[in-house]
Every structure is written in structure tokens, then in C-alpha cells.
Length: 264
Image: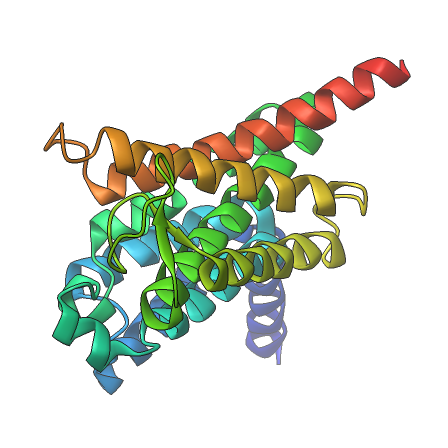
């Protein structure tokens, strides 16, 4: 009877530690999901990409809990889905993502590095937590906007223009924009921005700020793609993605900081 009582207390203690320590929850949850992904032979991530996604998931759950994790999961699932839109046609035209859209380590961190930095800074600099949470949401709002704009534009863009000259160019050209892609990008940005507000990571006033920041950041990315990417081979798509998400996060944070400063 004493042993039973002692075991019960130990079990309660372990349960309490797991509940109080989000890092343990992140490790267990992502290990469980990673095992399922391996057993089912999923094609959304490469093997190396799966390990890096595990690390990303642990970091996000450990710093921001289920709210931040949900943002990343929604981005990943929607982004993977739109990447597969019109895949056969995009592959035939040579404009599809490599590996049929399966994400590798470079894709994981090209999309999530800025958001991860914001999440870590929100943990270690609590006095700036509100701004870093906004930066986190804005970075993923920007990235989903970019993914939706690019993939929908490549699949359904009727008239595609180079952003620097407005001259017609083939779909999939670096720096090209289309009406269909732009509208899809706005929808993607809105989804993440509204989700970030609904789970309490930011206020409602930040929703339009995130959407506008994502739109402007995507214009910057298109300009970089049209003017610099062919000139500098080291300027990979993943690095441009990192620039894109950083610009989106910075624009949103600066806008809210200025608004708060003007109120004070």
C-alpha cells in the first residue's frame, strides 16, 4: 500500500513537470509526430527536413506554447497544399518546387528562421514580448502570403508581369507578379494574421498591419528576385525567403512601435 502511494506521488510529480515545462511537451509531441511521419512515409518533408522540423517544433512549443505551434502548423499545412496545386503542369513547365515540394532543411529555416528568432527573443526579453510576438506572426503571415502568391501565380496566373518593367514574362520568372497570385497572397497573409489574433498572440489592430507588411515584403522580394538573384548565384531562394520574412516582421514591428510611441 505504501509502494502504491509512493508510485502515485511520483506519477503526479512527473505529470506536473510535463505540464509546467513546455520544453518537455515540445520534445514528446514532436517526437510522436515525427515517428508517425516516418512510419507513414509522408512526402511533405525529406528525412533531413523532418529532423530540422522536429527541432523547429521543439523551439516554438518551448517558447510560445501551443499558440505559436499552431501558427507554424497552419503555415506548413497550407503552404504544402498550395505547393501541390497544378503540380503536373508546373513540373512540365520546369517551374515546380524541387523534390515535388518536399521540404528540406534549407526550406524549413528559410521559412522559419526569422519567426524562431522572434520567438526566442520574446522569451528572453519579456519587456519587448508584445513586439516580438507580432514579429513572429508577421513573419509567418509574410511567408504564407509569399508561398500562396508564388504557387497560385505559377498555376493560374493569366497575365504575369516583371515587377521592375511591367513587361509580360512567363509564369515562374523570378520577380514576376500576377493578379491571381497577388490575391492569393493577400488571403494567405490574412489567414495567419487572423489566427495570430484569435489565439491571443497580438491585438486586432495588428491584423491589417501584418497583412500590409506581408504585401510590402513580397514586393521587396519580387524586386530582389528581378534585379539581384540572377546576378548573384549565392542569393538562393531560401536566402531570399529569409530576407522576405525579416522585412515583413520588421515592417510590422516598426509600425506598431511608432503607433505606441505616438500614443505615449
